[in-house]
Image (cartoon, rainbow, N blue to C red):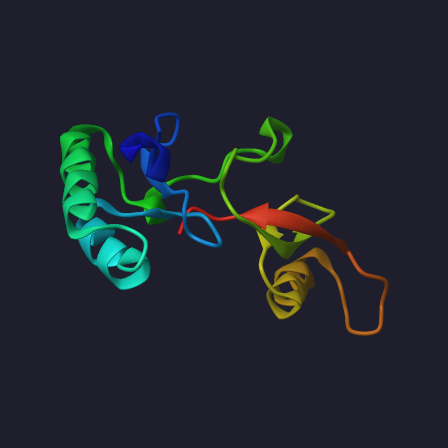
Length: 128
């Protein structure tokens, strides 16, 4: 059961909390606090301790989710990782989370206010 709650995504070197409403990755240093703050009512203290021990057993293989490079879109979505609405630049395929950020991004591509969009709405995933 431990592995099902904290899933090690070996291709990215991160731990995915699968019981969160919006499954996301947790850095090793934040596992104990995350489990205590968000899953105290669903996991016993003993079970949380087992999960922390499991996480630390992977210490040498883990990286901070902030340091993970988002895989290319053609690889498809990361199984289990939460999807959010975002925006994709039609020029360079950069993915951003807000319309304001995609507008700022597209200005160097030549986009101007009141011109046709150089982006489209899409689902994106982030590890954090």
